Image (tube, rainbow, N blue to C red; front, side, top):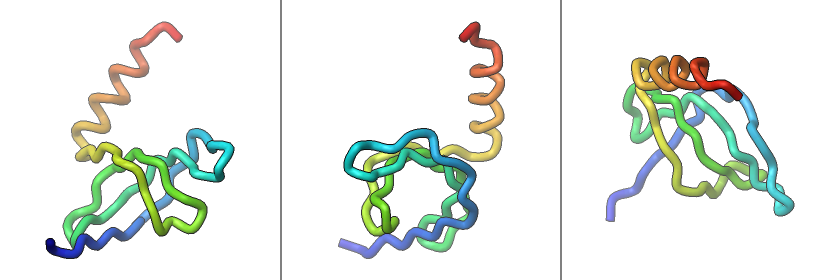
Length: 73
């Protein structure tokens, strides 16, 4: 299996932290040297391990923002 490289280009924010120290974060991440995408997933305290998550292009992130802004929370 091919190695996957990940680089956190910009840390945007932490949404929550588990009792084991893992944090759910929104970051701008480059996968395998490609154009960075918005990425939402949990990371261990050292950013050495990560959970499954989602990646969004700028356009997808803007649509999600618009949908969230339209919610009555």
